[in-house]
Image (cartoon, rainbow, N blue to C red; front, side, top):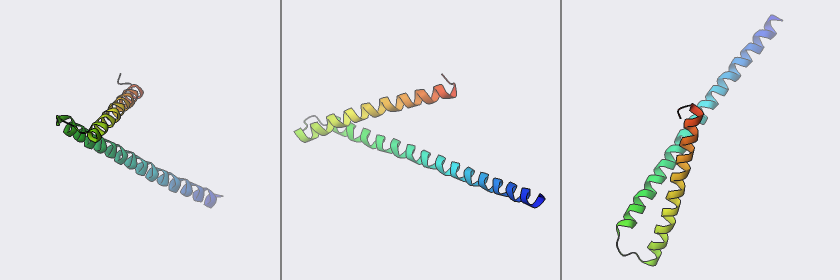
Amino acid sequence: MGRELAKKKGKKKSKEKVFERLDKITLMQQEANQLMKERTHTKKMKFYLKLSSEEHLDDRKKELFEKLADKLLASVLKMHRSNKISLYSRGLC
């Protein structure tokens, strides 16, 4: 009986370690995804500013400018909502 209990405890501990590693990996992936989103957003903002600084845009650039403005507005609203939700869940608001 003692050996079997020791084996079961060892298996539980090893499973817990595996789950801890998986949690760390998941957290790292989420952070990397967030950084990529922020990086993409920054690139879009730079492009938006570049297009908006040009006085005379041709039709293609106007279309790009409008699409980019819509995407940026949508992403800003989405980020604002998610930040607000995370603040509520943390009890900071």
